[in-house]
Length: 273
Image 1 (cartoon, rainbow, N blue to C red):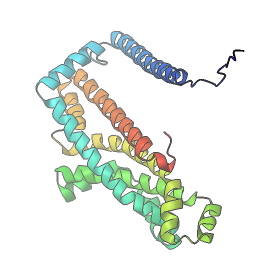
Image 2: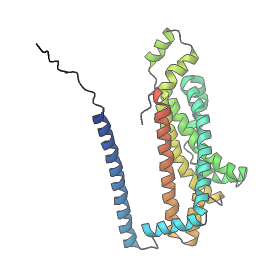
Image 3: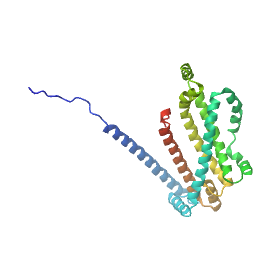
Image 4: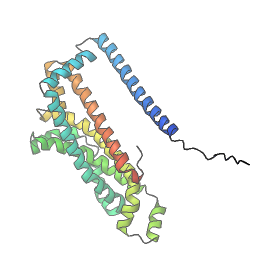
């Protein structure tokens, strides 16, 4: 008598999730492309309605970008502005994160520093442009300090808010298990605060782009802000559009890189972007 054995074990379904992921990514790329096409179409309609003296068309802007790229103006401006933003923003993180951790954990530090933070964070960086130039000159230091000033308070506020939002039950549980202050900071407080730090870093990056334009208009020969201002003086609306669009693209790239680094390197802390 022959015995027939039926294999009823479920087969692995690895293809379907992979296929769904590919379709989801393709759908995202398609929606991005559709959004860009619609935006360019609206831009073209506005340019046709108002004329080149007010709104440069996409073709004119592309031609101007090629012109500025050919003589090196656009590339030098991108490098100069990007370097200033990254240095000032990076210094803001280096100072803001430790300061936020101290303010959030130690009450006396919070009481000592809070009046200054609440005072200076409401003064826009553009108000200090003249003083920065007088004190530090028209070199790189004045621009970097202004961007640092823009970034540091945002990072401090978000970091301290994250520290103070840590559940008291988690802190008591860690203390009851014998964790010291340093272990509580590294094992409980910091992992819970990382999402707030990343959010503060992204907001600070956006504000850095707001500051760089005003700083370079006043005290810079090279940079995207200087390019926009010089274009205005020469009546080149197409150059102005090139500078504005380049700022937006540069900010998009910086933010995207920051999100990728945060999601991969800080995934063990529970950051989901």
